[in-house]
Image 1 (spheres, rainbow, N blue to C red):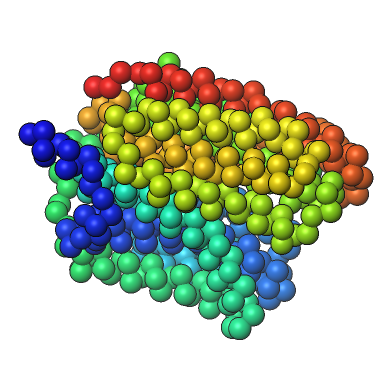
Image 2: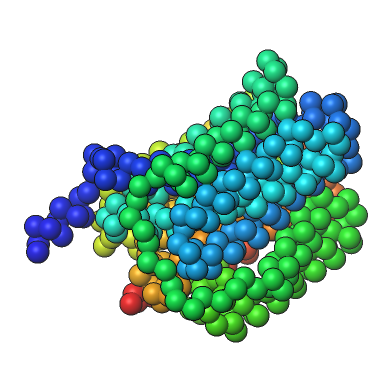
Length: 470
């Protein structure tokens, strides 16, 4: 027994890349790739899209509605997987994603394109959440960190290749070909899952209820309100939309927690008093608190330090690079180190935000780069083991819900964080004509205002790593 345990603990890349696990690994990686790359693809294609079909006033909703579909589908993914296993839902999600790409590619106007983006968000959100469900179902415990590291590697690669692909399509063909390219990949994935993939069937839960439409509508309303807060110009409207979104989210969480077999999220999902809730609150709060650099970093670096767009882009991208490197480096750590990896990693993330309060306004760029590297490396260390640690704390019937909720709540944190940073920036007087001194004040307000949120994340992290497993 000891020899078997030691071998399992040291399971390496050779084993996960072997014949037994390579097909499931490709499955989860392609699902994440389609979602992550497509979310960034439109960034570089949007100017050409507006030039072709108009709709400049609706540009922001391309991103907002994609997030609405993504988060809503992600919330439902765990319950769907309990009903039928992850295989059929993944095939349907890929097909829906492909159909959304086709609608976008053929769109004669911006409203039609937005409909395609909703379908892409629903399919992409379902794919990524079901990929996380599949990781915990298809890979034994010692192999799970390797699979999670592979997902981090794919996510990091998409941060570069998604916008790059958009630029290539716009330059050498058209933006419509870009959507068709990703739609074709999704169609191939759907056919492979449905007819070519050979993996062991996962057990299905008995007597699982139908999808709760009312709660899904509440969640969608919360995301729409938060997204609108992020793009609203008037501070009062922004604050009102954010409060409405938070209220709808709280109502969703309360109603979902009181439900039975049709729960979308695990019990106590946003309650830091419970071990699983603490882990999810940690992810949510940390993602909200670290959005300052992603949303306003390039603008502030230009105004304060005269940084070129290219250099600012590399500084922000350093988060993804260091995240990927850290995830690969620590992937072989045994389960007994999960708590230490999460604790050290999230402490590094919190330290990066605290250091940014000084570094972004004052510089030098090397110190700002250190902040981005700390944030990315900390996330890479922790993220690889959060799912494995959470699975030891969740009730058996909530494991699939937890696996699907983790990426969904992470994306909710990004959406909420963008809105919060917008409110902080507006309160600080940020505008297109801001002077360097005004930009310095804005930077201090944004990053100092993020500290209490990050502090909540640290508190939840301590609860998460000290809780006893089942």
